[in-house]
Image (cartoon, rainbow, N blue to C red; front, side, top):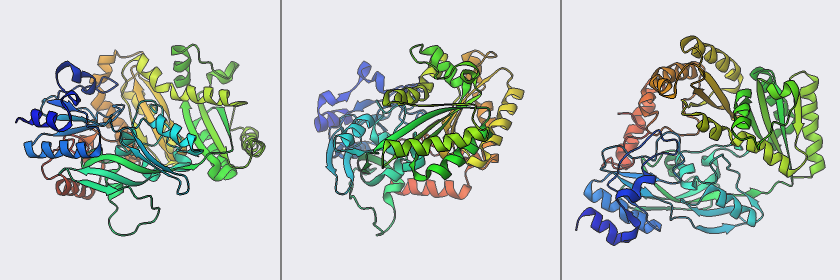
Length: 471
């Protein structure tokens, strides 16, 4: 039998897609990357994933794992050669178990993140990973890229939320590591090796994740600010006054919110007058385990201090859950508004919080000097130093002209990131977008060790080739 015939025999003919049926799996959601594939396989369980990988190893067929296909760096898109198999995990969408005594849940990789959150709520628990694409991204993709989101400040990245993994190796073996232990010091940390590896070392098929008590109460506020320097000072105040109760602290440039309300008129700015045209905004969230009154008192105290010190121009505190959701909806709509305005050059960077204002101010000035008229679209998770420092065409370029300058813009921004002791990838991964940038910014010993790990775990080089590691 041919490779495709063996594949059809192993997982069912209707779950091996070819021809036009493959198209939705061959292009990323931003439309920046489009490839070709030999076929798309849709296995229904871990054993079938292992069978598919074994067949690929036997026939020398590259494997491109894919979850919700919501990534921003082309990590789940095959190249143009048409020789790879796209392995979709969308059918592995079962929540296998929930253990409320251990505060854990065992979830398959194809589960939509929003469904995982809902399953936790049905057991009076919280799974805190939250990001704009949660209605379509999958847990496997979140783990493969070590996703962050809006609540990293309190709960950590995806890596911090996973206790154990089930993984199909490059040889088609199954690593059974779904233990729910918080302490296990019996050797190398294989879990954290696979998390963030973007499918280049193996395929995560399930995970044991941490659950948390549902907060008794929460408060949300949007603050209007004059500068990033002020936002950093407000963050310091909030950390001192709220400690671990501070769940989120988002920094948003004024033009980002203006773009949202322009694209989506049903959404409204919660400010009037000058505050509706502020240069910067901060979105804060507090989660409290005592009571709404306790939460509100602490929250208002911190915001009051910020107002008294002249760090905040204006503040809106949500009076209801609906108002809180509306404030977060403004923030979460920024990527959609960006897309509506056309393709931009995206940067997902991390900078020490203490250097964030200097980085933004100096890099903005350098970009304007080099590319007059471009527009910065800057927002992100200031609380953990993760900034989405994006560059749009503004008034000076067409979309195509901007994309033609991509390499120059990347070099300027990433050189600045490096100068400010940062990282060129904070939560979106490396994919194919940034892999050839790593030699410029990563320690050569780090890269050499990464190559050796890849060679040891995937000697045939079939696992998501062309991603993460440079040529």
